[in-house]
Length: 219
Image (cartoon, rainbow, N blue to C red; front, side, top):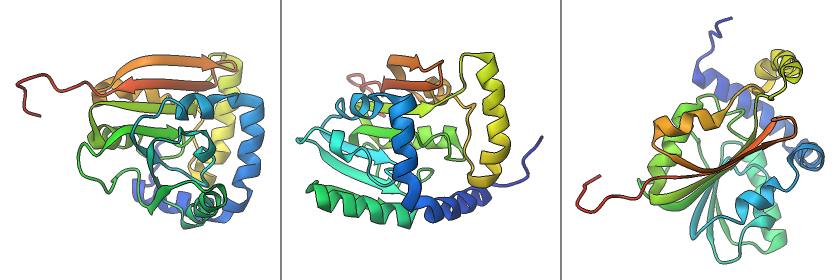
């Protein structure tokens, strides 16, 4: 079935949904962290280097996992979610620059960051290819991309369940269960370095690199 909604329609619907459900997000994600995602937040964040951008930082659930020596910027489309992230950062005493913004049009100049992080959010961002392209743009040559998400299971029976869930979750809040963001990375210019799938293939986490500029080559 062709979805007649535009990306703007999806974004507005998603924004309404996450503003409404911001207060219950931590409890919901706490369950999935325990049951499905294992140590993925720590696995991702502890690899972050130097100047770090987290795309779709949400309520700041990753803040406790970053190395102390990094400089962290977080962007989030939902004001309600971002307010909770501000509160969490203040309570933890974590220095982070939190901004309201769109993953499809990151408000940063080219080559601004050494690391870009995005966890459990590309399942909901309407245009995955554009979001990944923006992450590539703001990374410096040689920069690191750290991604984790729930994806289409490797078990056909679970994929059927995931497709059934999408009939509810896509109209409700724009959340997809059958996506594989990793499939878009090579076309965007990334080289995948590590890639892991577990929990019946439902969880995928990876590291990828924006190739370093070759000597004598002008970008």
